[in-house]
Length: 62
Image 1 (cartoon, rainbow, N blue to C red):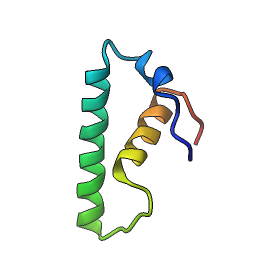
Image 2: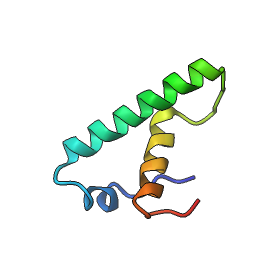
Image 3: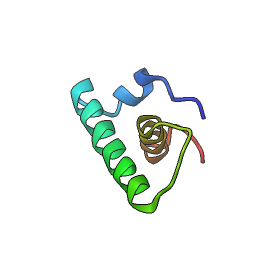
Image 4: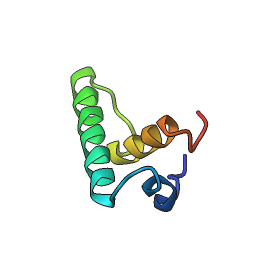
């Protein structure tokens, strides 16, 4: 899935640093979960986190 435009995501945040922190935190959780379960993904955890955050904000449909 294509990542949404950062301009659309930033509209939901006071500043871009909070957005980056939220994405990094979510990506870390995804990465740890993948290691624990032994899942292998061709998509990077950061991309998965951006897609997940976008879906939560209603920017993309899953």
